[in-house]
Image 1 (cartoon, helix red, strand yellow):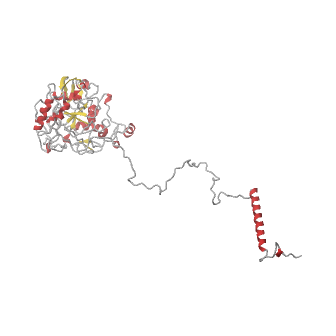
Image 2 (cartoon, one colour):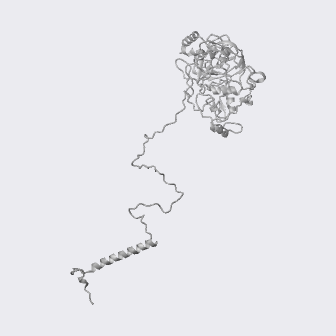
Image 3 (cartoon, rainbow, N blue to C red):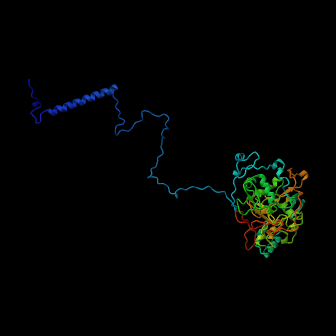
Length: 492
């Protein structure tokens, strides 16, 4: 039987019926494919990953690393280069550390090491390590004895009787001294002497004071005993004195092992010592700094004299800036060079040469306080400066009067400042009243003072003093050497 498919569905159409068969086959084939695929997925033979298809978010990974650091809940937004421009140097503000307030001393002082650092730096003999600016001090005066190496180092002591005397001065005496200073070409003012008034009655126990100022030879023996670099912080943790490594205005050299000066300066008064440096030396040899009242008593005696030798202003009895000398003769002289200027108790150079540290804190109004009078006054209980007495080679005689007072911060130095030590009178069995063995030193040979040794003159050794002279000015008031030593206010 034959079939005519060309007439299906109605009248005959152009192109025949092939396209209908194509569409029907395609639909049936696609449907079968879908059916087979769904059956495979349902039975687990086929896995369909829809997470990675375009347009879908990536899901959590199938495998997680347990040790990975979880992302922060609120992540910090990272600015883009476009949103945060690179800062210019002007936009970066770095606050500098606040410097420690200083006065006029320009010498850098290395800080003391901590106890741990000192133990690590020092050796079994407690010798300071060169690299730490000084270590544990070998001094131990608290044990009641002076180190064997320092026995006999102190100068000869002279006895000063106890009793009551009038300390200080009157406004009339200050005016008279100012007039003499101006007449001699100086520039003195009444204000310079106001802190030395009013006079007040002081009573002292007997004591002893060194006949001469401490010399370079004595002081450098002390530093060399303490060890290398001890000058930097070996005196109560601060500077003892400056060497030429710190300033040109010093006579002391330090070669990393030893302290020394030119031999002809051995018998000159040590200068540039801080108050701490002076105190440490005196304590090391079993002595102490004199109080201000003791110093004045030793200088003027019991009769109220204005100068150690009396009331006459005699420039031949002390090394001051008068009479005027040429530049080569300016500076200190060997200790004990002015025998005619001795005090009533035999102490030498208590006027001029170098001004001397005493133990007291300074107050310009202290003499008006009740504590200034009475028995053994010790000065104010606190302060910012310590007292200096006696004037110096760079000062007018006005400043060398036994009543004149000066002051300076205790950690500062001046090329015009030195010191001498004192001791209590109980010297039995070679001990002072604190029981500290002071050894010899009281019976040293007397100093030859038959002819004054003036700075700049030839001595028997052919030596010349090299103490740095201060800059000169028209008033010839006291000056100090060029910085970094302290610039002193008027006074001597």
